Image (cartoon, rainbow, N blue to C red; front, side):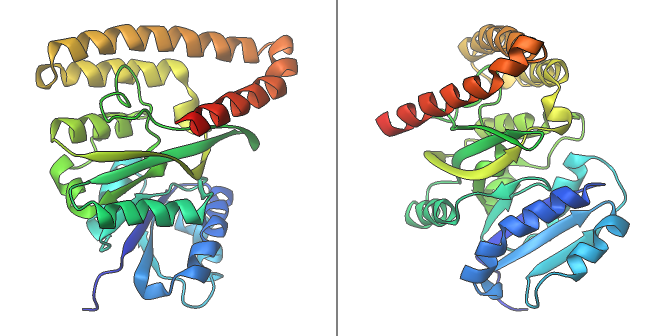
Length: 284
């Protein structure tokens, strides 16, 4: 066999040809900058009839690894993608999400190459909803701070050293919308060491199940309590407090945004958020 590629980009897709097209388009810069032997694009596809024409039209030499499987949920597709991946580093980039800054990806890979003790590097994501760009968000400065109470990590903005995924174990299929949060907590319990950066790596589509605040926070609670025996008591208390505060805050924002006044204020609110996050990033 040939030597493994440097990076495996893992994309799962189901009934979303337009989202897959967006993801592929965003990777064009990577395709043009890196020769195919240095990376691979693993697409786990549960709707091949929809995506076949798009994948057949990829440029010659695109390092595609196309895996067809029946629909069984996102977590199952992630596990299949990890099993197939051969890269030294692994990056989950779901259908509908896109590479925003190729230079950020290079910097994050550079961190992993320079710091051999780091199991992953986590950057930021630029949030979008219904095609409308909102604002960038970055993780907290520590692993625990980024999972306390809720999920502050967008896993599309995380690049892993591949052996770290073995230490975490497979994604749980018990959760419909917050399986990545369970994955992060498992990584924390397993002792993974992360590096956190303000580099905004991806454009993240906030559609789908992750946009259901009630469902997401219900699963946050289930996940936190499922791991309660593995976490310090003070972390369990912190999870309860932060989760309730964040749930109330986000639910209030969503309900306001659904009103006529909220729709009117939404562009200004997004602009203010972009300004505040830019200042915070500059200060850090």
